Length: 146
Length: 103
Image (tube, rainbow over all chains, first blue to last red; front, side, top):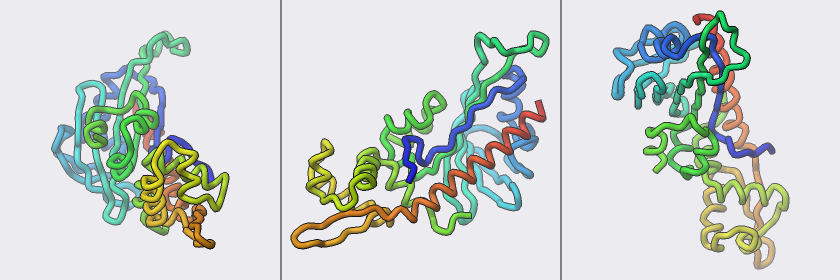
C-alpha cells in the first residue's frame, strides 16, 4: 500500500507559453473556462457565489465559485450527482528568471491546480493541507479547514 | 468509476495521527491500542478513537486474542480513493492540455 502526505489531494503544475493576463482571461470568465475546462460551461459569472453547471464526457457537475483573487486565483467547488464533492483551486504566477523562455515568445505563466475532496478539507489539519498543496492554498481552503 | 464512495476513506486518511497508525499497522500487523500508543505521542484513548474511525471506514479490522485486541489493515477500501485520485488527475491532464492548445 502506497501512502503519502498528498493522499486525497490532486495537484498539477504547468508552465504555459502566455502572459498571466492572457491565462487569467481563460479562467476568470465563463467564456474563457468554456474554451478548455469542460465540454459545456453554464455559469452566469466567475465571482464569489456565482453558480452553474459544467458537463464533461457526459457527466454534469454543479459548480459554485468560492473565491476570486483578481489576476491570481479562482477557487470553486463542484460535485457530480453521485460524485465526491471537491474543491478546485486554480492559481497563476509569473514565471520569474525564466531561463527557458524564448525571448521572442514573451513571458510565461505558471498554473497550479489543486483538487481535493471537501471531506478531506474538513478533517485535515492546516499543516497537512499546507504540505499537500503548498503555495497554491488560498484563504478559502484555510477557512474551510479551520 | 470507483465502486464505493471514497468519502469515508478520505476522511479517515485526512488526519495525520490516523495516517501514522496506518503506517505502523502496515509495518507491524497485529499491534494493540496500547502498543500503538507507546509509539505515538497520543493517549491510548485517542488511539482507540482513531482505530474506531479506521474500522468504520473499513480500513482496519480488530481481532480479540485472549485479553488483547489486535488490529490489522484491510486496505481494500483504499482502491476507491486511489481511483478517484487517478481519475481526477487524468481529467486535469486533459483539461490543461486543452488550455495549452488555446494559448
